[in-house]
Image (cartoon, rainbow, N blue to C red):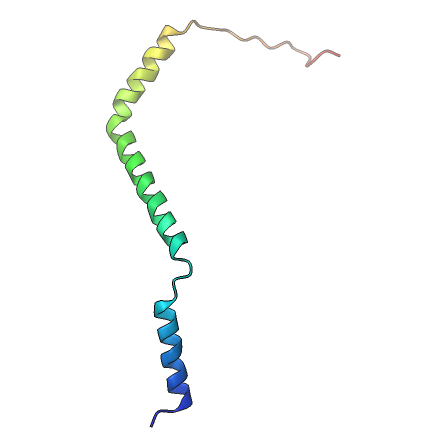
Length: 75
């Protein structure tokens, strides 16, 4: 009725659909992608407020002028 080739293909398809190797890696990558999307959304929502916080911190710090010696490091 069916040739050996057709039976072999059906067996390969069966094994392909019931093979669970690699599913953990896919699940972890989806989970990490979801965390990234949540972080990007939170940063977008809080971005303006966060910029204001860092600006206030910067304004509150004393100014420091760093002068470099000419001629490079001394031995």
